[in-house]
Amino acid sequence: MPSNNRAVTRAGTPLRRRPGRRDERKTYLICCEGENTETLYFKGLRRELRASTIRIEVFSGRGEPYGVVEKAVAEAARAAANGDEYDEVWCVFDVEAPRAHSRLAPALALAARHDIRCAISNPCFEVYLLLHYEELTAYLTTSEASRRLEQHPCGYSLRGKQVDFEALRPGRAKAFSRAAMLDRLHLGKPVTARNPSTSVPGLVTVLMSHTGLHSTR
Image (cartoon, rainbow, N blue to C red; front, side):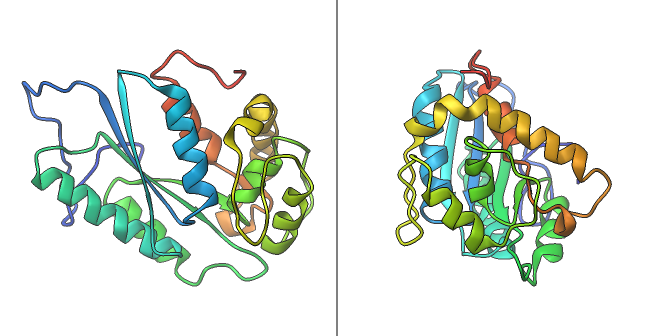
């Protein structure tokens, strides 16, 4: 995946911040697969950061990775047409298990063509939240991860998929450390074989870097 983080138009042309623009805040678009859990988490993080140097827009996508990336491409193009382009565009989506999303590979290819960065969890975003409370190494299905998260005090339920962001904050450093351990465990494997794993800490770290906060907070 390209390391260049610029937002792009539908045709794949980079959208650069124009010289002389007054608003010098770093701007991010985060497009999430889930309508509840992921969106609530990143809106909670946005409230925590409250920085004058960063602007974060959070949208829910279309329920599967390819649709999420399509939504991000369209929103980036719309913003650029209005003269308010994003500095970075991110998509947050899941692999799912036991059966992976059928259009996962095309979604990653589309994101790469448009310089969109992806924060991917295998099997699901709930793995990232679980890592705030416990170590994970064994294979998990999506439903198993959700049931395990219900056992922790973060307001999550499988039916409503709500989440209490404030309850998660104390475990963030541990979640980052445990996610890094899983990265080492799955080194060299394709994303579909990296179960369990999550690259969400990479996105959170990028956002926090503009505010002087660290994962230990």
